[in-house]
Length: 149
Length: 149
Image 1 (cartoon, chains in turn purple, brown):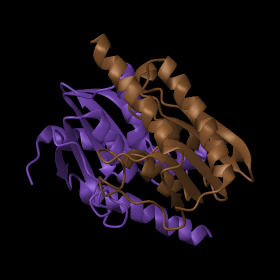
Image 2 (cartoon, rainbow over the protein chains, first blue to last red):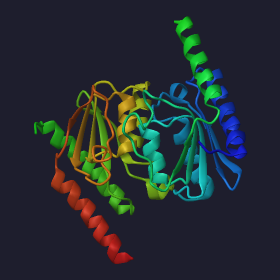
Image 3 (cartoon, rainbow over the protein chains, first blue to last red):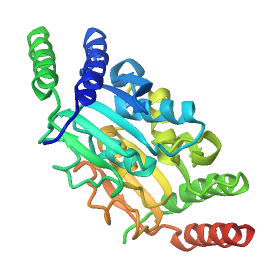
Image 4 (cartoon, rainbow over the protein chains, first blue to last red):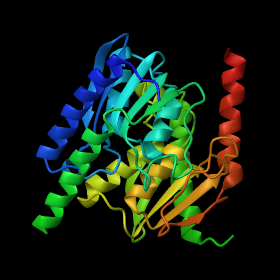
C-alpha cells in the first residue's frame, strides 16, 4: 500500500470531521476534498440530523467541491474519507470522475467493494490510511450507542 | 412483468418531470414518490443546472420524501423513475429501505444491475413501465444535443 505524508495529513483533517459527527450523535465518518494540496471541501455524516439517507460525508463533500470549482467534475481532486465509501457514494464518485480516493477503515459489510460497486476507471484508490484511528472511533460510537439503549 | 394501472398513472407523472428536465437541457429523467396512492415528492434531473453529479431525480426525490415524512426511511413508499437507477441512486434507495421501485427504460450501460449494484432485499422492483415513452424522450434529447454540437 503506497501512501504519502500528505495522505496522512489530510486523513487527520477528515478524522476531525468524523469526531464532529460523533459529538452530534452521528455515525462518525468525515471527509475532505483537496486540489493541489489545498482543502476545498469538508463534511461529516449528517444522516440523523437531516433525516436523510443521502447526507453521507462524501455526498456533501462532492457537492461542496463542485460548487467551489464551478463544475461538476472533480478532476485533479482527492477525496479523503475515514470509512470505505458505500455503494451510493461510490456511484457519486464514479460520476464525478474524481482523480484519487483515499479511505481509512475498510467496510466489509457495506463498503462498495463488498456490495459489488464500481469506481471510475480514472480514479486511483488507496485504502487503510489511519485505519486504526477511523475504526476505533466507529467502534467507540457503536459501543456508546448500545449502552445508551 | 406485473404492473397495475396505478403504476402507469404515476409513471406518467414521472414522465412529465422528465419533460421538464428536457426543456431545461438536462438529461430527461423524472421521478415521483408516493405513499398510499398520494404523491409526496416530484423531481427531475438537475445535474447541469446545479453543476452537481449528485442531483439525479431519484436523489432529490428521496430527500424531499424524507423531509415530508419527517424521517429517513421510506417504508411503504413507491418510487416511479423513468430510467433504471444508477449505482449511486440504487445505493441511496438501499439505505432508504423503500418498499417498491418502478422504473421505465432499462439502462444496460449505467443501470445498477449492469454495474453490479444492489437494492435492499425489502424493495420490490418492477421495470419497463412506459419504457417506450421514457426511452424515446432520452433518444430525442441525445439526437438534438448531437445536432447542436
